[in-house]
Length: 320
Image 1 (cartoon, rainbow, N blue to C red):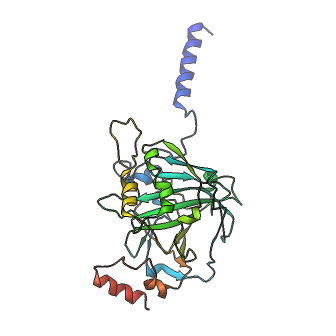
Image 2: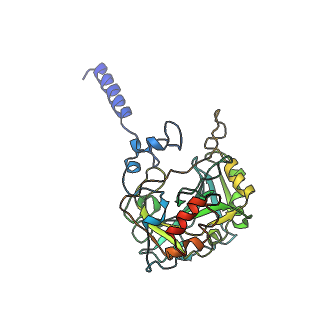
Image 3: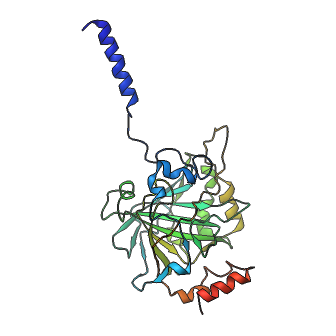
């Protein structure tokens, strides 16, 4: 073959190779945000599951709740991590994430689920109502998710997230109230991860301290990841009773972080990082507590003050 033909063939091969993906698409796929052109409404274009069935979060209201006396209290094994060990706190551009050891496990589910990470969702200082799940249509100030994967069936969280019964997430509703020293073990380190990609190492502590009172009272349903790719592979446990953090702690969460890198010329504040509630067709939420008790429980107290009409409606839904 003449030399110039070899040269032309080599160039053609390089062009073809350049057009081929050199590696698989990143795990998180294309960029996504909560607002703007890559916001929630556009998620289904790049992540079909986001427009599919079994999506989360949802509104927890009386019409879809069903008591199930088979819902046993969960047991939290390995949740008390020694201060000699370290957690890694990361700003991933969407939330602040704390990596967790797989020795942390939930008992009381059909399989063994091992922890992988926790993260938070919140609003902003002008509208501090940033929980993902709502109760009776009402948002809480923020929400904490502790993510576990099915370690009986799958080798890691990444694999499990795509598979049936792959993940189990504990959701903790957060309201404004008194100062919470346990949550401050995370919040006090937020300035160290101000920008996307930054990491900090923090001393270990008991993750069980982050759970609410009476954790045996919870909502349970089958749903999805609340961020792309929205795989419908999550067994949700939403605790009925919220935890409290102070106004100052909430403000720190709402103002400390950015979605952008440190040197980005157009910094974007990390606020309102919660997905809107999804339709809940032909599904039920199973509860470990009797519905008639709901008006006496912490979740509904103070949630509807100032609306006499709503209170009357709730009282009819939840007879004492």
